[in-house]
Image (tube, rainbow, N blue to C red; front, side, top):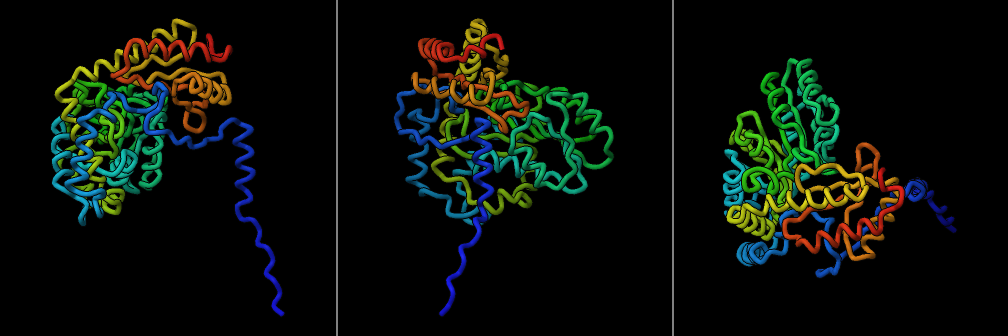
Amino acid sequence: MPQPHPEPADVFAWIDDAERAREQAGLVRTLRPRPASSPLLDLASNDYLGLSRHPETVRGARDAAERWGAGATGSRLVTGTTELHAELERELAAFCGFEAALVLSSGYAANLAAVTALSDRGTLVVSDAGNHASIVDGCRLSRAGTAVIPHADPEAARKTLGTYDGRALLVSDSVFSVDGDAAPLAAYAAACRDEGAALVVDDAHGLGVLGEGGRGALHAAGLAGAPGVVATLTLSKSLGSQGGAVLGPAKVIRHLVNTARTFIFDTGLAPAAAGAALASLRLLAREPERAGRAREVAGRLYGRLTASGLTAARPDAAVVSVRAPSASAALRWAADCREAGLSVGCFRPPSVPDGISRLRLTARADLTGDEISRAVETILATAPAAAVDL
């Protein structure tokens, strides 16, 4: 008779050890599905302008789905490009001050596209230490030589670029997602001009918040449309939709169409998302005061929290980051806020490059004065004692 096969070894046994280590460090992450309508006051999402549920944004999504269908049906180079995508690209480029734009399925895909398509094994990529994970992954996938410079240090960028004779690229967030501080874009651009390098800036947290009428950090710095500058951004924050884009000179966009793998081999952005983003963009163009309101709310949150003894980074845009004494304390603090009716972000390693855990608050343009007061009071009431004067 045939002998029964022995039980195979558990090839994923190492995961148990990894889970135990995460639990001991207070770094376990879990998914919490939210209902369509939540009683929580939202200071956790990136809906900076409060447009994700705006009637015009929702109508833009609905009308696009009814006209074009639920999905793009294929990659952009096959069947996934609709007239709607082209319309969004034209208006997005014009609004932000660039010659051309290319829409992708996410901001993450946009960063991967820009970094990998504009570099190769012979390129030096200089990356700010505070950059988003999508830029870090783009550097890794590009196979280029990568030099990570200290955070927001233009002199380090200049010196690093000056040591290389070949093609070079400096890449940075415009507003860093952890502390909400702005990059020294003018100084970075000057270093790139002097050293003959290109500048790629992820403006995910600047669009809709910075610049004239929310046209972005590059527009504010006078760099929009400059020949050596490329911007990436997301449609999922200030525009309340989904997707990403790369903006820059037309020849750069043509190059991405032919070489960027996250564009060529990915299904196009769903029509509903494109329609929603276009509707939000037009709304922002008509109501430019929304950008200033988001910055005002951020300033009020920062001022009141720091006046009460909490340590927070001064916001340059719409992110307010409040330090916690430990990863486990941050997790408990966020949970206590949620139980009290307030949703806040909780950033812990490895999401924070300096290893310091934080609560991350989103200053939304549609928050009322009463909601701001309620948020501040809840954060202070639930704060760990060690968080005061940290």
